[in-house]
Length: 504
Ligand code: GLN
Image 1 (cartoon, rainbow, N blue to C red):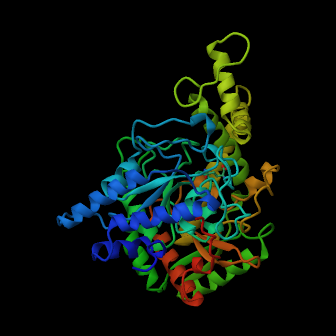
Image 2: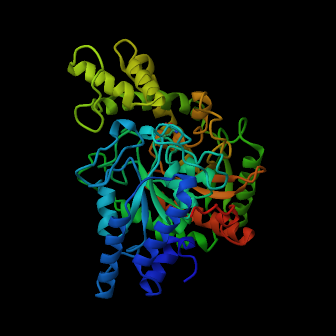
Image 3: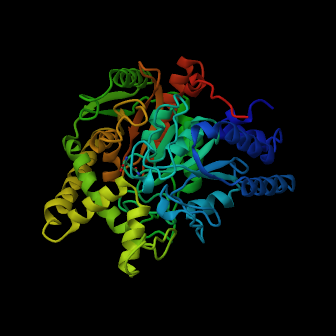
């Protein structure tokens, strides 16, 4: 069989169903690829080879016995390390959770395991999902497979890099302000943030509970649709979980790939795409708009004036919720415990020493900011105002979706920047999410699909946003864009990525 790791999840699933390949062979091929390239990429924090191969063997046996299997059964997957996995270490990229082994699985992991997908391991991320470059991980940088001196995006840089480097055909990410879509954009992969509440958050280590959402990271739109349908749906264990059935994303991707978008109204967001956007990013964006019109879509310019305040509102709401969510990491319950070297050993001093040593700078910065924003006398001025802005943004989107079916923008203003370039400038780092954050504030779904390479030879992402619960529209438009661009490129964008040096 040709290079198994280069197949999409759908192609691999077909080969498994057709009996051309076993899940053990497919899983082993990915484990070998991880051994070969991950010393350079560092997408993984933990690799669970034995558990993955056990699942693969069980799936092969079940298939041999003629059991009814999920379409993705036997296709390996990587999981972001913010998602808890029973018996496998889970750190959320933080030293404070070093050595913690969760006693339970997140609901999405339960679904993945029940469907027979071997879990290859856990992927690197910015500590507690705070960041846009994965440089805030407590366990070292992940490198962008397109250029190892550049960032893979963040916070889910590990999941995106693993998929882009052919270490896994599928991965799970989480998106609180862009951590699935921004890494997808800068690595030439596909990333989806589903409607808030449509994928269970049970077993996700919370960053900001009103914004967090798990979703697929893949190389094709169809693969994302399959994974979305697997992990989506109501969960009684998550009180914010929607009761709606998951829309038929796979059918929508199939319809989109046929390339006919006649009658579709596409809104181009005025506020996302002007100053601060790299010329090459804007050029690829405009070319993609032309493809949409070519496929029969109607373009409309749409203004969402309050998006100018989205970043400001987000960086009050997120730290406020994070400061509360992270209070439980106190050296008493999970992972690290630091006893002060001198002086008395009191609970307070152990907590302070543990948090002082266990948390990194970005996490501390946001805890301080959030605690301040929530404190008496400041709550109304900061947190309260930010929530009002959030409502205005939701109204902007609601008004826009009266006029159009989907909204579009570049996913990220720039391509992947160099490691270290923005590390000393938190505001510059925050600006990378200016186009992804509004969707989280409004709870609406979004996808990033590859739109080509910028002048610097690095990937650019095209973002599509849809109304709450209309996630299937992302797949229709995403698949149409993908099909049109791939016929222009003569294959997937990732085929143009440089070969990685293979470790021996
Ligand atoms: N980069 C954004 C932040 O730092 C988004 C994070 C995320 O989506 N988890 O908050």
